[in-house]
Image (cartoon, rainbow, N blue to C red; front, side):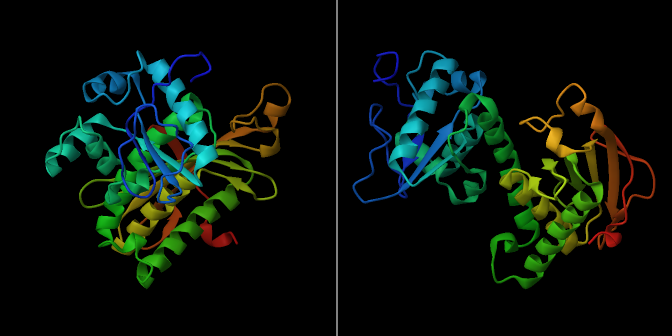
Length: 312
């Protein structure tokens, strides 16, 4: 029963355990499968429009999207008590329809939803759930994770599947080089609250990445893991394929210790120690260096950044 005394409306777009399996609408999420599986995966509808579009598939019997989110939050809370790993991904109705069409599946069948959720090419869209407020930061992160996952698949195709192959030394070296480029951008910028915007011109369409970063005076950096992975992957693909690119780091430079919990400067005197800044770097396909002049990326104007070779 829920906290309101009504029977739980269990969202049915879930797969629990390492094998896909259909879930009963009233099955408790905290119950381990008989085989001892320890993973729980759930697909989450991330908007009211998606919720309405998915009604025909009977994913949930919630009367509206707000009720659906409350039920899903309760389900996730129970899952964390009963499973070692709880992960979620965006349940995208159009992606699901196309997946069913390609695989000859009936979208109204629970087995189709299970196969969609654990589809190996889509594993990059999964996020670990650690008790975050579902309707707050976590749902937007699920949307970004889908977008990031599509970009990661594109980057992996450009690398002939080498992005996740441990034995590909050239790709591994380029990935480390990309991570070092990003690190030097941040170190030279100093403490502050920033957003990195990155674009690499690639066959099949531009590779893009964005990441919000909070950097403290002692060099400690706060960034979502999935955003860091995407930035490094895009930089890696560009270096391996020798593709031109542009990066802009912009935000409030200053004492990050006076920033609010969400990474925004607090008002009052503390906020006055921040100054707005925006720097740009360009890649000729081989190396990243300060942009040759003022540039604009995604509407953000920036001046040439610091030479990355001077940062250690």
